[in-house]
Image 1 (spheres, rainbow, N blue to C red):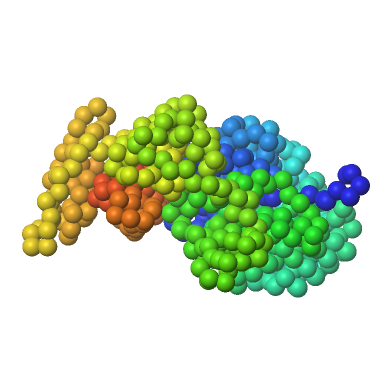
Image 2 (cartoon, rainbow, N blue to C red):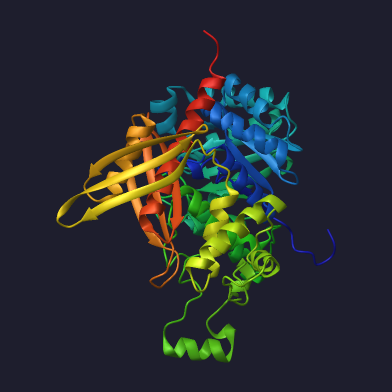
Length: 516
């Protein structure tokens, strides 16, 4: 390291594994690949692409990501079991830099009630499974689940054993979000001082937000000298979620003078990453969320506005441009050409291929005929809808609605399916319910609608409506998204989007089922 250089800390992103475990945040194969590509642009060091043994879909997604993503380590989670580790290796073997991440619980409550094993049995299993993973890859990460509620002496012993067995990273998870920054700092220091071979492995941390301290605990760990921090985009994850990547990274960048470390993340990709994950998972970012919330750089107070106009540094400790928010706004309308359209997309952080650009431009022209001004938010919504490849098994041909406050709503819907058209008519409690019932008659599958949400993409009477639906089949949630100035059309598109994802996954499951 050059004299005066700031040491680097690794960013381990687990949006596709722990983040996807957040209720209702499941993604399909193409969506996971799109998120992985964005994480590659974000320049994170490690992408935990999934839990290979969890399902055939998880395995397929990790394999696809391992083949396509370059410049990042690709990891798969595995319990400390041979079958899990075998499957993890199958998942990551094509990666440029593969990692197997194995774990076992180490707290008394977990060992007694979940594992039903003694501490000695757990230690022996952990050591054996790290050795087993090592025969596949040189890079093996070991996590002591529920470490912050574990006996310290036992942690010292198990970490020493797994490092001796070949672990290159040892992870200290605050699995249930129980610890505090002061306790966590002390735990890390105690581990560094009491594990004799600790210098042979990098120390990592993984914090949950049950008490609202995930980011604070992670930053305390940075000060304590850890080498890797685990996080997710928008802080999504089980229960209250994980430490938020955008908050950690901008904390490191903004207060480098205090933390004295840097990371490789391209901060100008943060805003786009946040929007992408929010749109794909249907997990809305709260307006006052740090860094990426709608109000993060808004100033309503007259005193604040005056100060910012005089000098941005009065109330902005970071610039909106540093996270990828555009510097200026170019008005686009129906007379705008392809060059202006493409230039605006590039300024928003989108680099589409020729086919994607052509499709997006055609949709833009259709939208521009209906709206006088097409805003950046319209473009983002349009592009994100078009760049995620969802098999169009059922496609909307047309619909007719008859509705009012004194008659029963009726919908006639015609869909294209495998070169044919199918049509159905149904009544319902309102025009959208009637349309959904007509689609149900055509599709002929049993599932339930769990939630329906409608948001306005921009302000004004000509704003596009963005509809998000969640449907459930066999305890599996499928998220659909639709966009249109007509909210009934947006609703139908969202419903079909979710149905197409469901059918595609059901077909994939049938293809990978073992014979007999």
